[in-house]
Amino acid sequence: MKAHHFLLGLILLTAIPATVRADGEITRVVAMVDDKVFTNVDVQEAAAQQIEQLKATSQGKELEEKQQKVFDMTLNMLINRELVYLEFKSLKAQLPAAYVQSRIDSIIMAETGGDELKFEENLYKQGKTMKDFQDKLKRDIAIEMLVRSRVKNAISIPDTAIEEFYDAHKYEMIIPTKYHIAVLMIRENGKYKDTLNTVMTELNQKLSQPECDFTALVKSYSEGANAENGGDQGWLEAPHESIKEAIKEFKEGDVTKVPVKIGDNYYFIRLVDVKGGGVPPLDSALKEKIKTKLSHDEEKTL
Image 1 (cartoon, rainbow, N blue to C red):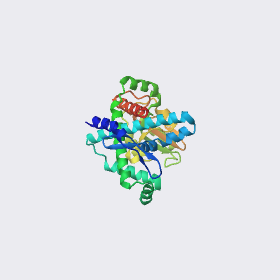
Image 2 (tube, rainbow, N blue to C red):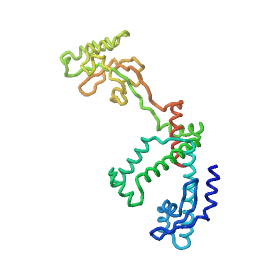
Image 3 (cartoon, rainbow, N blue to C red):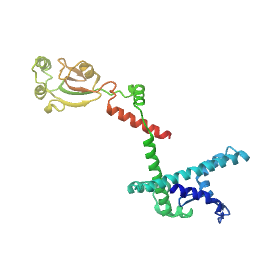
Image 4 (cartoon, rainbow, N blue to C red):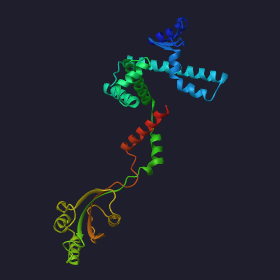
């Protein structure tokens, strides 16, 4: 029924007389979609920027032909947008009030620095009211939402595209290795400075025992941070290079028998856990992440 309304509107255009505006410009109806009327002035306003660009590069008959082409394309665009809006209304869809208000606020902020009164004055100079502005914006948002929904539904990302993207970019996705370590720190000039060699030998012997309790030794000897909690340092992405070198071949639970010297401190290190490192596998989570990116990229081209 709506399609019939639209066709009837187009058929009757020749019967609608043109009118002359106060500024002398002739206004004539060029299309009707349901109860929405489009005039030549509506189309010219929508195409104004493109037409100005044409005037800078063309003239004479060539300019006239290009202007007519832009006029026809713009009219088709306006008609299609109105048809989309009619479909939106037929779905009885609702616009999120908070989103609409945020768009209104953003426009007012951009145009008048948030001065709503000044914004309304500017609308008045254009022969419009705040309600006119809000109604048009709501139509635009409704059209945007439905078009975006259509685009998303039309996009299909095959598994082969996901795999190709992964193969092309997997080395950009390398996950840095994370180390969970605990440390027993002895200060060179700390409380053991007079018995440093003795303490180091004692710790080396104790740490060499199969049943050594590293946490207990930290609580008894360490001069470092968090000693009361076993010297736990949590997860580190970038520990000191000397520490990384010392534990690079470690398995979980291994402890350095020889301390790592950094500055004036000595560190006995226990590798609690390690994770990450290298290229991530193409599991279901990563596939979904790649699919989302490819979908967004595809939307921009439509």
